[in-house]
Length: 133
Image (tube, rainbow, N blue to C red; front, side, top):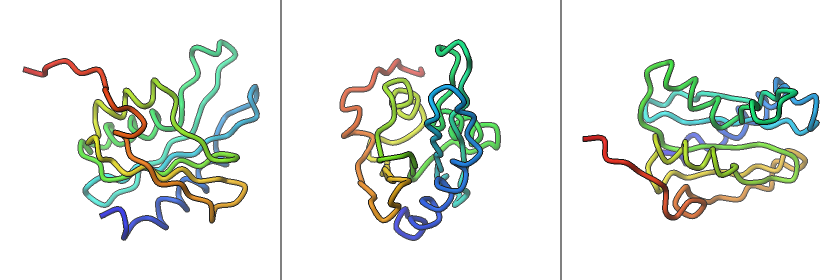
């Protein structure tokens, strides 16, 4: 499924990145999460003067999807300068809602032709999980 949405995910992550609120780090990040419905949910990092209250783009994208009622996901694109991977907290939140084989596109915002493809399992091989029963 992600193949047909690859370009739209990348474009969405790059476009939304401009709405990030990053006055302290000057490091805007955009994320675009593909629901299995075909809808793309976007998020940006929103910093806070108290660094611990900053919310990452990936978690904002997940929150937007959950608010909209989406619960299953097929892919994620993250756009930032130089490319990069989600932080540990974002990896764990992704593991709560996404399959281990979730494709993740790491987009270099300075050169969008540079896209590294990885998976949630590669980034977080042993996620913490509690039984939902």
